Image (cartoon, rainbow, N blue to C red; front, side, top):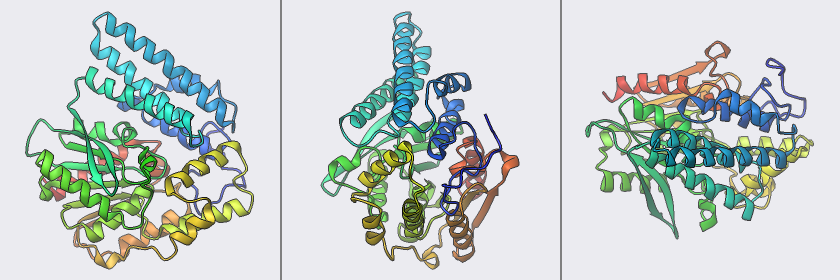
Length: 393
């Protein structure tokens, strides 16, 4: 493992999400392998399990990635059943959550279609069973939106007056994996937690709901549901957006008045600069690997477009005006992020007129300098928790 090597020259440094190599030469594969390890402390795979899986993967080969993670998921799910038969319900739940993490990783580089959906549904099944076996206070809910529904989970804190954190992922995520990335930590810290898929996330695109510029609209629908169904108080409601969800968070901060605080990692106010950077990378031949091509197909499916050219046309001119943001806002930035992420986050923090705002930049010494702190998710939690205790508590 070449831990400190930089990425290959085909990586576009303006849009990169990692600047060093952890296990795989393929930067997309390396990023999501790092993410799989990062979920470990919250109930995902152990380092030993993750590296066992990695040994079965051919660097840059998407099919070998999917097979290796799915196979390990089958092993862990079978072991969970055995523990359950022996009356060890908690241990069964722990194995089941690991099985979820495997199936979740397995679909990362699978092109849209039956195989993708089968793996995704399997991951959902194991996630919901794990929540039950671990006796976690998880309530699955759905939010009517457009001609479909936005799925989510709500976790009620033991204290009824506790603040609520609404966690929203980005282009590559589903709301269930945000439980391992962030949700469980906040629940352990006494917060209520809401996880949800917005249009174009998870499997919502199956309903014809894709990424949309005015993401304050689905977020408003989610807030409506949280208030009506779970009694969430807006003055105690914070939103955390991650990756492309950083744009969703910026959008909500500008237009959704019922949020008491907003966090973005990183803050993204002009998403088309990112999309255009990826399009340039493709034009320059930088999206050449099997993994990169398949991951791009999934993203175009989520966006509801045929290719990057259509994506950049559709999002041309889309932006959030920072001058509209008065809500307390925390911007978090990992120093491995590419120039687009760095520039927009710093400009956003400088430009928003919020009386209570903070920019946290995390360097290599923090172990949390990768995209969305994927190499150290707990550090993000600590920063968010510490800041919210100043703002909300």
